Length: 431
Image (cartoon, rainbow, N blue to C red; front, side, top):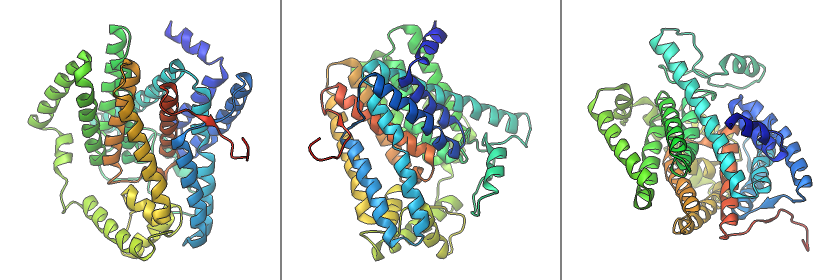
């Protein structure tokens, strides 16, 4: 029954576009961008068939403004060619945003898309669990801790740049090339797996989505990413706190979470040991503190336009200060200020402000599905906000694509709830 429904969806252009992007998220970073090409083709076909023009919302407009600031930063960039290439890349990536806002014309399509992304996250969880079992439990030390490692090393050997594809200890990265990136991916999408569980119409659906969420959570534990751990903890707490008053399922999940948290702290385990290792003396923590200090000093010298879009500019500043092996500032606010100054940070802050204001408004709605979807977005926001204070997710295409899709989902949600309408994405006079 489920397979037949999915097979039927695959006959529609709107879902083929969504599916192409989702498959791209399971591929290497460079292939995720290529997957946007068929997505664009299906977007055009679906829009023509449904007589619908590309749509844009307020968050999308802020995204376009941010991309415009990237082009401005080329004029002051330490590496103008790099900044130009990053600007061009970010001009292509919003295909994922416009796909979402144009083809997701009703709540059912939005829900199907969120379930598909949940399936992608679950696949990553399974891969992560298997990576850890093969490497740590079965002793197969040559097991790639990032799925595409053999292909990545072959492809990147043709690029004249230093890329770090190895790390210490057994830390899984699933289909990403770094455990932290996989952790951030989970923080961004896990709330919607919980949403699918809380709003499922039948008890079996609730249990299936709940089990799927547990699988996703187990997979990310093996990343040993402390920033992701903290982001997930805050995300789950926010989700349950916002849902408890009106959901019996949320109250049950809160009980399960409380018991799990107690066991997590009381029973000795490597995950708690990893969290307890956070200290000034830790190498990674110390490197971040040094990078933040260097970034703040650099920002004070160029606060308005920064040093140019792209992490290469930030990496140059950090490594020139004697901090090796740090590809960016490990803080999104500082990274945006380094790359584009206040001019680039303002659109990002506006996105955050508009996002929070409208989802907090919908959270008070009577409609159960609309309310719980906004709760999912809000919990994602707080977990992700904490996570990005110690990392920078937009250094890779896949997380940038997911970020843009989330903006698209929000703008679609606002439109469907009657809070803020989408409009035709044209900037020609009189349109």
